[in-house]
Image (cartoon, one colour):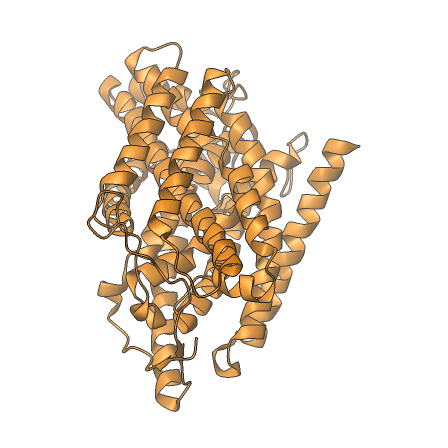
Length: 462
C-alpha cells in the first residue's frame, strides 16, 4: 500500500446509520430470539445480566474491529493475514464449522411449519435455504440489498415485540426483570443450579452477532465507504454487470497528518454513537423484551426444555390472552426474524471465507487480482448445499445445532479478540491506536471467553 490518500471528511450521524443494523440483525435469530428466551423460559429472569454483559462486550469488540477498517480502508482479515498468514486457513475453517450448521434456519422453518400445520419442517427449511441463495444472488450490490432488508425487518419486528411484551408483562414480571439485571434470580445469584454452562456460554456468545461474524463489521465499514474505506471497491451481485470485476483487497494508507487525525477522531466519535444506539441499545432492548415476553408467557410450562417448543408455547399463550391472530402473527414475525438472521449470517460468513481464500490465492500468485464476487457465491451455495445435506440426513434439531455452533463460535471469539487487539497495536500508527482503557477492556473480554471456553471443554470431556 504505497499510495497515500487524504482521510475523507466525516459524514453526519443520520447518513452514517447502516452497518450496525446488519450486525444487529445477525444476532436477532440466535441469542435474542432463541437462546436467552429459552434460558428464561426454563430458569427465569435471574440471568438477564448475562445478556447485557454479553452485548456490552461485543460493542467494544466491534468498535476495535471498526477502528482498523476506518484507518486502513480494508478488512481486519487483510491486516491479520499480513502479520500471520496461517490465519486465513483458520478463519475459513472456524467460520464454516461454526456457522455451517443450519440451526437458525431450522428454527425459522419449525416455527413457520407450526403456523402452516406442516409436521416435517425440514422441507420448509430446505426451501428457505434455497430462497436465501436466490436473494443473495440477485442484488445489484449485496451489501445495499442486505441493509434494506434488515432495516425493514428490525423497524417492524422490534416495536412489535416491545408492545407485546409491555402488554403481557405483569408488575411481578417487571420486578423479576429488574432483579435479573443485577443477577438476582429466584433462589440463586447470577447462575441458577442445573443450568448448562455450554448453553449459557452459547447465549453469551450470541448476545449480538458472535463468533467470526463480528469481524465482518470491518467489511461492512469498507463496503459503505466509511473512513479510508471510501477508496475501496464493493462486492457486486452475481447477475450484476460488474460481477466480473476483479477486486483488490488491500486498502489505502493516509499520511496521518494533523488534519487526517482530526478527521479520524470525528469519524470515530460518530461511528461510536451510531453503534451504541443501533447495536448496543436496540440489541439490549430486543433481548430484554424477548426475555420478558418468554418469562411472562411460558416460564414454568412443562415442555419448555424440548428444543424450541417454548417459542410455539409463547404463540399459544399470546393467542389465548390477547387474540388468536396475534399469537399467529407473533410466530410469523419470529420466523421472519430468524430467516432474516440466517440470510445475514450466510452473507457474512461467505464474505469472511471468500476474502480469506482470496488472500491465500493472492499470496500464491503475486501481483494478480482476484474476482471476490465469484468466490463469495461459491461459498454461499456451498453452505446451502451443506445445510440441505444435513436436513436430508435428518440432522435438523434447531436448538442442538445452534448451541453446538455457538460454543464453537465462543472459542473463535477468544481467538479473534486477541488477533484484532494485536493487529491494532502492531499495524496502526500510535495516534490511531486504542487507549489504555480500551486495551484493559479487551484484555478482560479475552480472559472471559478463554476461561469460559476451557470450562465448557472440561465439562464435556471429563
